[in-house]
Image (cartoon, rainbow, N blue to C red; front, side, top):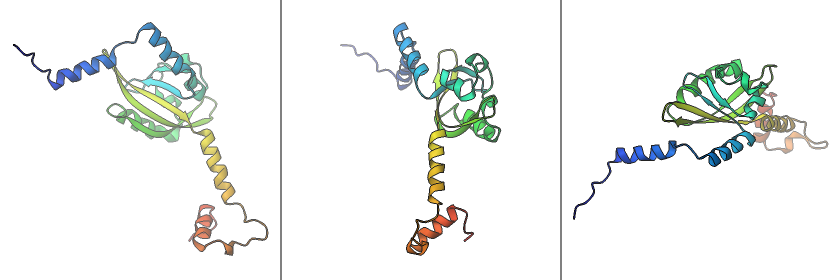
Length: 181
């Protein structure tokens, strides 16, 4: 009785990569496209040099441009100038590992969209690219700012700050810019 030789770990790894990179059927592809186009997050793919290969409608909304004016352009055109270094770091690290970070996009009219971005490398048979999913943080940051401002409001009438524990008063004063201590 002859035994078949075991596959080496490298050939097993190649088989797994081949299965992952196989193209979906027409039905599967249309379902994936529907998911990407209707999700609330922005999604786009990048070449390793930072050019946008694909963007969903939501990404177009982030930067207030039709997708025809987005695809083929460098990511840096759509990032707020103060976040250029963060975008460059994302491109470099995103080529070899998943990345999660904050990045601020800037629309053509100057408005900004703070976002939490997550990346992963996509390995296709003929090339590799970086897949990016961006979640708009505008509302979260606005509510956090409102809560911070509210915490700096004066204490309720009839209540003096001396009734609060000293440590809480000190922390609150520092956060509100009332004390240099």
